[in-house]
Length: 357
Ligand SMILES: Cc1cc2nc3c(=O)[nH]c(=O)nc-3n(C[C@H](O)[C@H](O)[C@H](O)COP(=O)(O)O)c2cc1C
Image 1 (tube, rainbow, N blue to C red):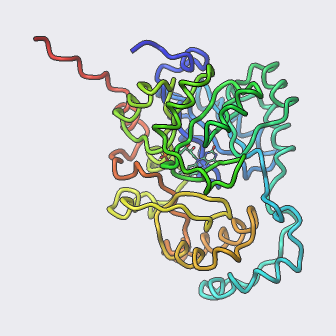
Image 2: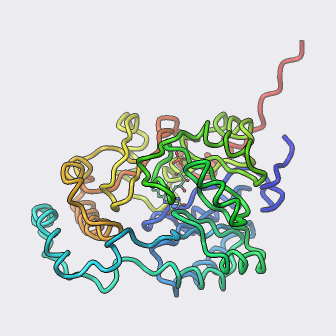
Image 3: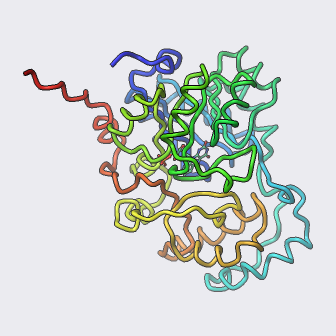
């Protein structure tokens, strides 16, 4: 198969990108293993403090000679999520108090900030110079995109609709990710509420590839070699896989989540604002049921994520997954591999040659 433009630009032997994972689920070991196997390893850095970014890129550089992508969330709060004061905290606390009590956790003090500032993170990223700056939930401002161009950092922005892809294209973003609603994790819409557009990977990839000149990457529900070949047939220059890499031992998730990804429970996923306040896909469990009941009352991102973080840690420490965020995409029932080496070698097997007549 001939090399795609994306492979050429990023020096990739294979048209495969490991999707970044936020929330502490990325690891250096995972990203490096993917890059060392000829794909693009990514690290989701949106919850890192700015001063953690340079040492992270150093650690990635030490672990691989391949290209690496660093990922940030361009918008770091939803309306009301940046100035969530004591009164607002008091108003939502009763929603969480019974579950905190179940795990014996005291009422926490509100933090000074619920999320690091994107504006500071991106400055640190520019200094650290990863090969690729991938981002979701918006478009970096022109000065940041210009600084990336000047430093030779390729930019990779996510679109959930053709209109978002056109906006990324007009801003001069180098590579466009077509994120179908099959994808695990968040639906990173930025022009309209995420619920308004749940277009799938197949039509979205094809629309963007046929309308724009920028190289396109397909993401959402792709978990095996046939899926990657389908993405390339649609005009994508690479496929980004998340759930299939999350299931590998090298990722930062916990074993209970991995086991559920490989079980029949993963045949059903749902979209919910439970985990963070932003729409995301995962496998239904108790926390999704409890929070979905309270949907209209939940605090905005990133406050919801902060409350859920306490419950998730306590639940996992107690040995149950009732309050864990079981992120998963619709491709989960296709999963077979538990290590990056096994997954990458299966994804990159040469296609069978047509039999000679
Ligand atoms: C647990 C989890 C966390 C994710 N976090 C991020 C993130 O921080 N930034 C991002 O750009 N994409 C994130 N994604 C999306 C993935 O990088 C990828 O695009 C998506 O998982 C592809 O769909 P798939 O899971 O069906 O393969 C996340 C996905 C999952 C499953």
